[in-house]
Amino acid sequence: MHRDNASTSLNLSPQQLYRGLYIRIARKLAVDPSYVSRVARGDRQSPQIEAALRRELAKINRQLGHTPASAAGKLSRPGSAAKRLGSLLGENRSRLRTQWLRHSQADPDLRRVKIAAQKRTAPILPVIEEAMKVMKMDLKEMASAPMKAAKQHGRLRQAQGFTPMALVEEYNLMRRCVFGLAKEHAQQMDQQVLIQDLTQFGEALDLQTQRALGDYLAAV
Image (cartoon, rainbow, N blue to C red; front, side):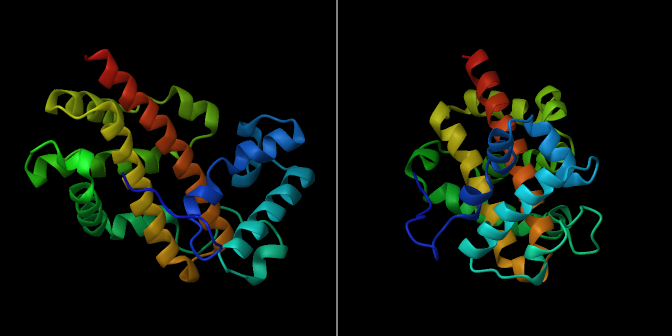
């Protein structure tokens, strides 16, 4: 199965840098990750958390080779006029599906199951769209969200003969496609807002993976 090469700064995977951002800050400051999330969204105020977010975001920007002027300034808010991740994904639905299918068909474990391309891609966009909705919640709300698309995805893949690891890899490929698209358009977007969006999207996708796998195993 494919794994991104993060051995150099030029090849660092954005998802590896963004993933768990709120949790890392929460652990350093001994607070709940959901509180860090609310501060990042602008729902709460905390100079200490905002300073920690600025430091982490600036570090990630440097690792990705981005040096936006706003990196050292005021923490960007989700209300920014810059294009958001949701808009970018909505405009590139067909491209995401095509890229995901190409990666899936190139993976030995995934292509072992012989199904039509339409059946292979059928659950993918619904899961991504669900993640886009769930990412707007805080971490506690995410944990109790229904995740219907992810659960249906798990049951479907079990019925189609996919292995549990193949199911998990499908989520890795979704993450790869979404983060790759965001990286490609990063220069046209507010860097800090984009990082916040990608972090929240990644948290949502992690929970969806757990739900999908849980329903897969329950159907065995």
